[in-house]
Length: 174
Image (cartoon, rainbow, N blue to C red; front, side, top):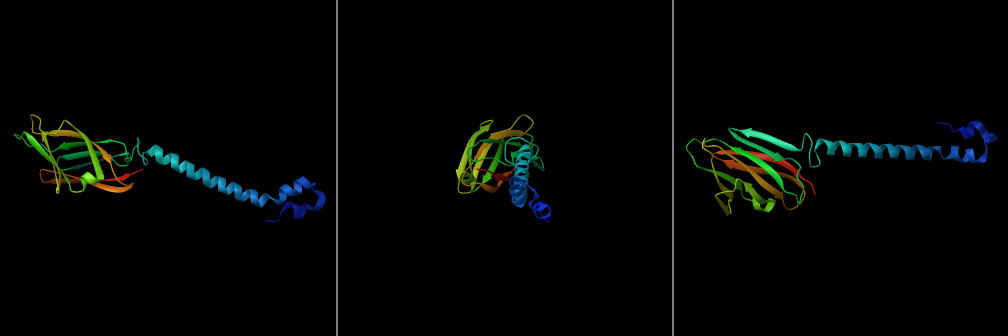
């Protein structure tokens, strides 16, 4: 693209000649600014959708396998406790439910509390087993308050009960 300096020649005053001579640099600067605005807009959109933790339509995951229902945080943050809501399959006549969290759970997560409180918690090399009370219909609902440990990155939490297993993928942010 020919510059106006070349087509206008020395007819322009010196300050305008200087400005016209730097127009290419100014176009590059504007391009960099537009890229920066696009990146900031993408960051704000990701936060509004819940992809960075907190609230938003994609912040929580939900799944169901043969009566085992789970709702979990898809994007938890290190150092923050998040609720994991579980509904265990009903077993009429049973008074106790067992929930098994496999080996490696204690290195990836810290269990702060269970609601309702577990009757018994067994920690061993095979993982963590929680024995929980069931309601009159044989069902059990509980909330585990978990805090991710270690480094940021992708994780998969697995829960097992009554021969059913559910994997919950998540990405842990710093």
